[in-house]
Length: 159
Image 1: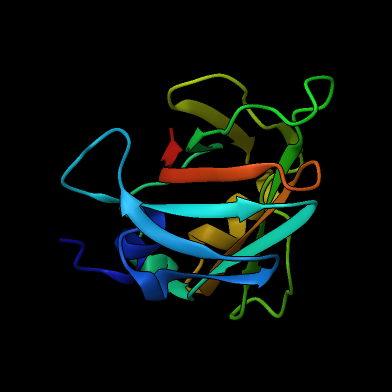
Image 2: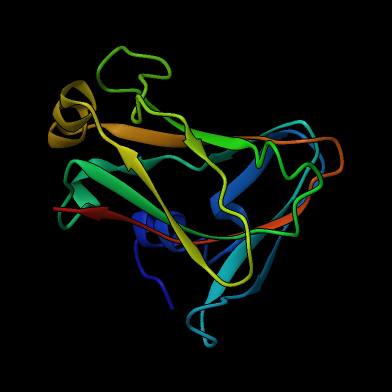
């Protein structure tokens, strides 16, 4: 069971770690990669936005230039456009609002099984994470109308 706030956020382990800002519903499900852990199931239709609870950057054991996310996608509604995802960071101690953590918007994966989505953390985001801040992550999933349910799991930094 996660102990720190950052473990709850990065692991999608508790109901209070993430909430829907715009879109339909999100709920905890069994992790597709580690059955004894949890993951977040999000119904996506058009623009869907979820946001984490605030976490202290001091709880991050390590962070690096890549933020990885495991995603299980539904069968594509529109095979010519799988949709995309963008991650943002808001740090309260730095007088910044929604400083973008991932400058790249990545395509949502298609096909069965868990896929890894990689977000590039820009130098400004790394600098915010290196300071003593309270931060939130915001994930935007943009896909076709009634795209289906995506399962999000194991958000982590790669050194």
